[in-house]
Image 1 (spheres, one colour):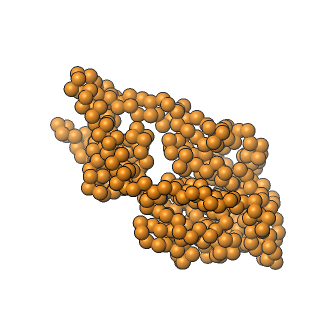
Image 2 (tube, rainbow, N blue to C red):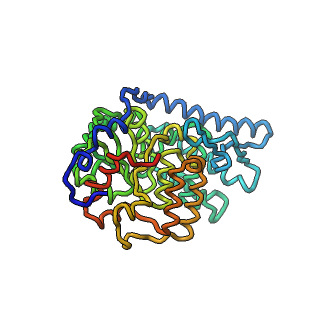
Image 3 (cartoon, one colour):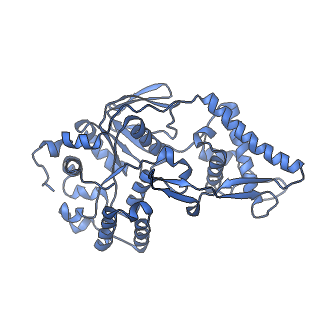
Length: 402
């Protein structure tokens, strides 16, 4: 790697023309078709009524009411090598009313289904937290039995409803907390308001929870690629240094594990405008897992992989070789603990990493080092080393893992 404060050659100052040809794909893909909210609501309500009718029909017919819920487990998840994504299998579990172990969850499912129906009927939306409180009360005839013990229990039931109904969370009128930021050469239309992401100051544009075509449209997309960083602290450095302007890109961050909204935004820009997704994440099992989720999808959301996973995403760094390559000091080393080591070995066995020699070398090198590193460790070289030297040189050298 070059020393800090190098002369700004084309390779060190901006993405070279050769690299742009490599990472920029052909444009011209069609934008996602925005299905009207009225049509979506009608479809979702019909599915909800179908669930309710099934329960009523079983009860009136003298049969035990039950719900069939697809299993969101590793055993019911398969790796689609051809498409490069995780997919949910066909296994499902019955949720029965007369089974004492399942009756509570059966009731919770119908309670949230009713809440969703009410939201759609009133033309309102609610947060995950709001849905928890909307369904929270003490069960009649008991002194202390609550419908939900905590929000985590409520969120799980809502995800079960998503996959059972074959509807996106957004189609259920539910949104999550906003987490993630964007800035760069793009103009978006958010609920009718035009947002120029070139003029968002130091704070950037907060990526919303719902990024579907009927809410978010892309007006002017003039960037060559998207650089996605793990944390806001790193994103702030890139934004302050105007990296997006120098290198004609879009900068995004996911505040750690990116939310569905962030992943959906990246997915749409990649699919609809051909923008390559290049990731700058920590050199640890958790940074590797974040990349895996962006690239292949996750087990818990395998039913949404087609609209979230980006098989062509690239991992730029930070890499296990960078301690020596960048001449970093011992101060940046963070010792791997037992949990880190176990997680790293699990990730090595993921099918999409198992047969990839580059990733096998990467993780083995980290384990051999015995330490992990954060992207912020590059600050020990210079405050802007990551924006002026590290990333530009890696882009110019096309030095990334896929």
